[in-house]
Image (tube, rainbow, N blue to C red; front, side):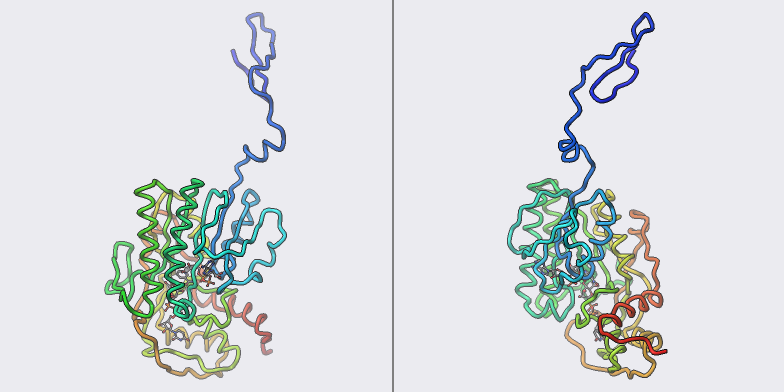
Length: 355
Ligand SMILES: NC(=O)c1ccc[n+]([C@@H]2O[C@H](COP(=O)([O-])OP(=O)(O)OC[C@H]3O[C@@H](n4cnc5c(N)ncnc54)[C@H](O)[C@@H]3O)[C@@H](O)[C@H]2O)c1
Ligand SMILES: O=C(O)[C@H]1O[C@H](OP(=O)(O)OP(=O)(O)OC[C@H]2O[C@@H](n3ccc(=O)[nH]c3=O)[C@H](O)[C@@H]2O)[C@H](O)[C@@H](O)[C@@H]1O
């Protein structure tokens, strides 16, 4: 009868009741081999990891001591500053690289975030935005195929365009202008989603697709141009809050820690997606301006200004699927998240709180 197997030996009970130890199993691997091949360490690539969402994701991944994290970023809208606390850490690597060029790194998972996200940045060089979405995603899928990694794409609620269905479930195909000034981003992300599913069907790649709705929080670029960062920076500088006409357009704002939790659950779960990740609390842009004014600076005026073409008139995620499949729903309400972002903006702008 076999009693115990340990460290390459096997102990058997003989018929006379004695125990006999034999060494039939292979010897114990050297400590080096043990750490290289037998531990359940996960090597994770985060493209766009120096950006707003990416750097918060890196923080969460690095908290798990079994993870090694590699960030690839070209610093177009991101900054090394966002990753300051990890630079020099033995489980962390930072590589300046543009995802429109191929790269080979041995990894188990890829979070593919690299892409400018604010309209002012993605419209700045639209051809580059398309290349980043299409060639960048092709390169990351090629890498996933070669090294057998699971890959997650951060797609966007912008794939629903100016939606005619409200709130938006994942089954809605969207209402996107293919030749407008936002198309480099919207259509770019739609092609990126198509590539993900074609690689999955054709090559069996393990994919995950998140459709993220307007996310805000600390570390957003102060001059990022997106509405929450603009209003908070304007309120702290004592400048008018610029509400783009008509002001009745709606958005649903998700705090970044909730979003990162959803991304990790999606990556670790079994469902390919697409899955909406966002906070269903819906506000008009004018309501957002009034809330920022009330919470941060009651003295500032609200100024109506011109809008840009194709601005979606309403947006709110249907998160039924995320609740069912990931057991996920956001916890931070807008009124609780804005003050957390205010503290970060105050310290970066050097504006103290008035007593
Ligand atoms: N924040 C949101 O509300 C939101 C909503 C929907 C989807 N997303 C998606 O989430 C991802 C991250 O968005 P974010 O808000 O953190 O934006 P961000 O601009 O702060 O981060 C994007 C990062 O990608 C890097 N990058 C851009 N082009 C690159 C390239 N060619 N090669 C390598 N790196 C490149 C930038 O330097 C930056 O660090 C994007 O894919 C975006 O489309 C964000
Ligand atoms: O969540 C998403 O899927 C997408 O949201 C954003 O797109 P958008 O909603 O247009 O983001 P903002 O630029 O923050 O604009 C939101 C609304 O606020 C308005 N706005 C913006 C800035 C401003 O100063 N004032 C203002 O009223 C805009 O007209 C728009 O109606 C970005 O495109 C992406 O970050 C992201 O993929």
